[in-house]
Length: 246
Image (tube, rainbow, N blue to C red; front, side, top):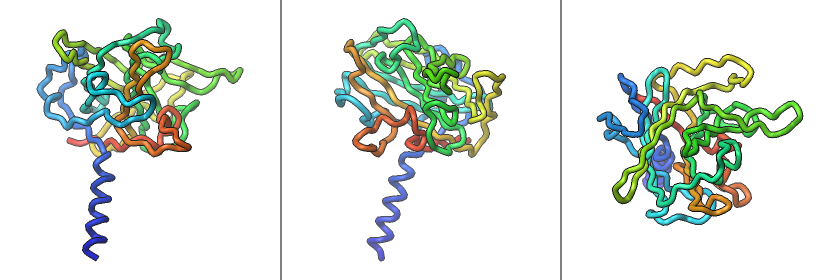
């Protein structure tokens, strides 16, 4: 019995280890890539160290961590990224954005999970080095893929240190939208409140100059389906739990 209870406790602990928390702030951070507000340094910090796709990078090639804050209007994200070579080969932010360096932010407003590739049940924002945000939406009337800019959802700014290891400080303010969102409507973002749970995951596409991205690293472990762990862009069920706390 003791062994069984111990196993259950260990199992529960391992599950909750994947649950992120965002702490409330009374004053919104200035999104400028400086992250000089004192509350940013208080954590908790979460690592971007789970392999999704490509080769496993060395720590010098890529490493990252992040922390989260919120108020009623925005979810705030600070990511610190070490990437030895920054790469952005596609001037059009809607063209092969996954093969350029980018931060990928996965959000499911009601933590319901499920498919979201060509609907707005959840969002997979690809935020490029040009600070533009891209996600796939419902297909066009002719059935073609609808790759759209959603810059009104995210305010993004980053700066890179001039001193080794040249850390990128990336600040973002994110409006959270529910599954009633429509490109053709005037949409109001959700008012956030203490205790709310969202589906959330963070990832980074890393390319050092190849035709395709070389590494894809995430914040949460993903159970592969037929050997494939690159599922976040289409299935919100692989997102982790994010709780808004005070």
